[in-house]
Image 1 (cartoon, rainbow, N blue to C red):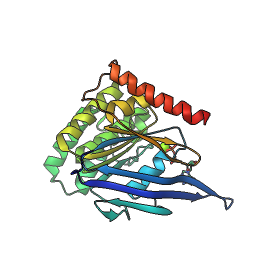
Image 2: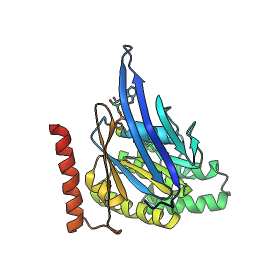
Image 3: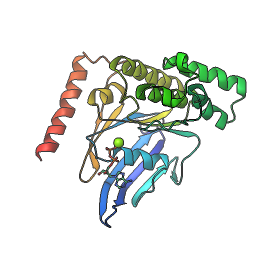
Image 4: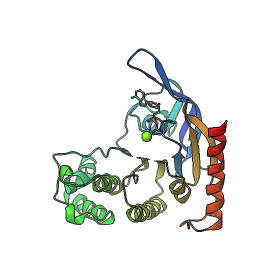
Length: 257
Ligand code: ADP
Ligand code: MG
């Protein structure tokens, strides 16, 4: 992070408690301090239940904080912003629209002229390898394909801020690596700010300029690690292994402490 880069997302003392059905409370996140500079690709990584989804939903305006401060471009996050895109863990597709129609939706909603929208939707489907399924409906395709539709829909729009919650989790290793590469070239070409949630350490190291390691009970930031390696990153590289080692060591500290 350079001193001159403007802060895109700023969390200070951010807290989220959920009320449980029996009247108790669940502290999903506490004391989260994080500054994301404009144009950064940052990965949130941590075990199930550490508040990754909660944090990204707060940033995307789908949940409201119960404490602390959260701003984007200096303004408190109040509601979902149409210029920001969130890819949910559960795809968020419209069942009544075809694959092509789902990808087209985001472009139409932004007033992209019809011919251009169709061309960009087509291009995005090609990127995720789904041209053959363009006229199927979501119930006719597999989970992994649905996730690729959601990714194509987000990439087609070229948003300034992209929130991705374990977007590649359901994919086979080859498709996953291809999409990681595509995501990196999209990011390098467009300068979007990307917050990427994963529970996969290798994926976090392959993608993130910084990796935010989170811990559970209560959900919080454990450590933030700068990944100082050029892209594309080779998993077989010595530096890659060193970062993997460092993150694993931190996990072990967590589980023993
Ligand atoms: P992660 O994405 O890292 O697995 P989550 O943000 O989904 O973690 O959840 C963090 C904690 O908050 C968990 O203990 C989870 O059970 C709880 N939680 C998440 N969403 C809700 C909700 N809507 N109501 C109550 N508790 C929730
Ligand atoms: Mg989650």
